[in-house]
Image (cartoon, rainbow, N blue to C red; front, side):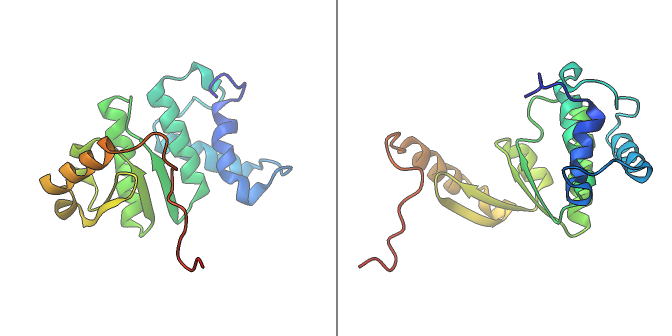
Length: 170
């Protein structure tokens, strides 16, 4: 909720949760980490701004700065390049590629197939259930794309989101 009265600094500092905890203090070393994360995403000087005053691209950069502080081995991204300008998308993609190069697992939900083709070496295509997974060039084939489209068109809105588990049932 971007109307919540929190500053850029405070939102980025949430990336230190595992280290600081709910009632810990942000110490000078943490302040330096926050400043470095903001600098890494091109937002030096934004620390005191309320998040409600940010553009969509600036907010996405703030969320990536928070991810930098989390220092996670597995990173989950939901449409990270949607509704942002090309420069911001390129800058954030550079961070994703850096994480990949460091051996981290990056799972990104994307609908922009051109970005997937160019930037992501491995792909899992899901249309309510797995269609295909593997090397991107082998997954994003016309046959798999057609199958995914047909699966989406066949979805029954009244059906359960996940099929009930039937293995081992009596």
